[in-house]
Image 1: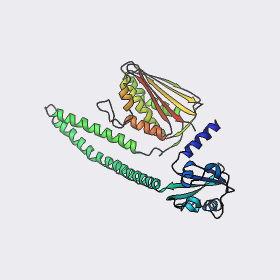
Image 2 (image 1 turned 90 degrees about the vertical axis):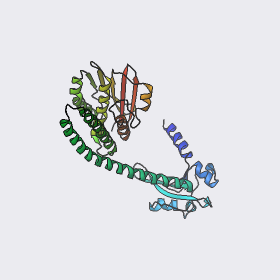
Image 3 (image 1 turned 30 degrees about the vertical axis):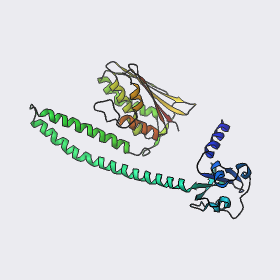
Length: 341
């Protein structure tokens, strides 16, 4: 298994579009990837095992522990000649924080510009996202005022033909407020309150929260919670929101007398906690299955289309995954996988 992992690592390193040169503590070259071979014209098998000659910035990195940025490539490899790009050096430490070598990264000028453009774009998107979240939050205040006055008008117009218009306006305001709530929920950081928590406790609390609604809808919930499930590292509030939304979707897919089966288990082989929620509802067609995680996609008249999108983002932020199986008229199975501590 270790050999397979190493071979994959070698493939990845050789297919990078940036040059990599690594030396051990004695200054011997122990890594020289394909991209750097193309940049220099040197062959990998002729370089590996050779020692760098002093003075050399990469050797200085090991000796002093100082890392360098925006270097001339010739400061590490004089044979680089007229190569146009930027070079940086970095210390390599083992698990015990002991220096075992150093690596030089050679980034071509074009690639460097691409990376800088990507960073600028990401910063702009982050600013726009923050502005959007603040703007949406501010929109809610006038909507609350409008909602209040609409309800007053509804009382004055009760029994008149115009009452229907007010009812329609209030329904649309409710839809907009729900959309704002979902948007603000999504805009919250994914790692804000991550602590050691018990999936068993989270599921138990969620089951208690939905118990009353299940009873009103005349639905049965069958819980099978394993005792050997280890703790996870996550935001318990966000995970509760995930499972509440899954239950909500199941409720809406079930008719009177329907059933929901929830099972937790510990996948020792993958070191993952599993939560399986199965319902006997109407199921989904292929188009819904394909688009269900897309933002603003919904099959519900009053839905915002952000529920499943937010669910997936929260699970992704917890380094987990969600799998869904569904057939029309045969129900849906939702499986959530979360890494254990």
